[in-house]
Length: 125
Image (tube, rainbow, N blue to C red; front, side, top):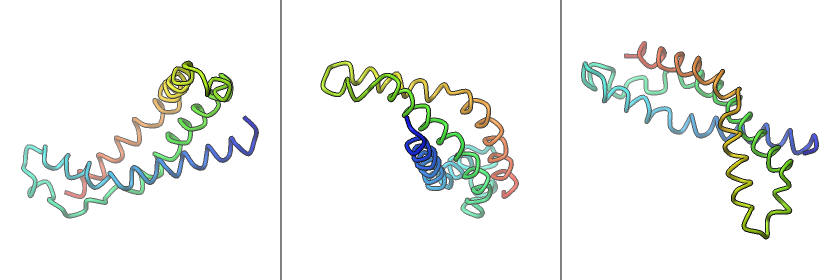
């Protein structure tokens, strides 16, 4: 993987992660409030469903970027393009995705981001 591909994977992954989290953030907030012991309306209802969204977006960028870079690098190292015509190609893609998921960056940065997100969500109520 050359520098250009690395930067492209980094930026594309980070932006994709932010788009997904910003799209699903209000749904996750509503789900959390529906599960609240107080009930949906007392937990805040639809008020402030985007509270904490910026912290989720900022936190999701490095996670998604790390996943995409690991995924693309692993495919590159395994020579996924040489496997493209064979039955081994799905295995190389599965291995690359698995390595992307267990990437140390995902475990280290996602827990604090989720704590901050939950604090902002509960403070809005």
